[in-house]
Length: 109
Picture 1 (spheres, rainbow, N blue to C red):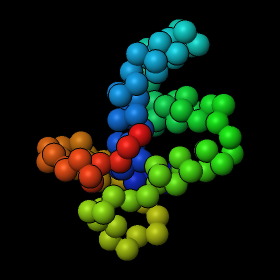
Picture 2: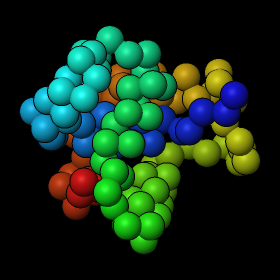
Picture 3: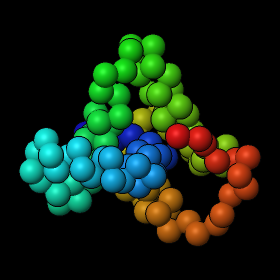
């Protein structure tokens, strides 16, 4: 299985955190399950589905492009695909990154 690079997960989690009451309430109401009890890949899929639900094809494509665009400082290592190990390592690095980026470098979600 090929997983997306770390920044996709990071951006989806940021989106859910910024709109937590809406996301959390919607998921509890619809499923009766605590979203944080889901495995990470499933949680990311749920966040993505929640965000694009009801969007036009054009809106979903635009969101997908923003989501998948690598950050300026991403280390791509010339790989066409991401292996599970490489993805896990890059995601772990992203979660441990405590640098605060200037506002102009942050994506607006």
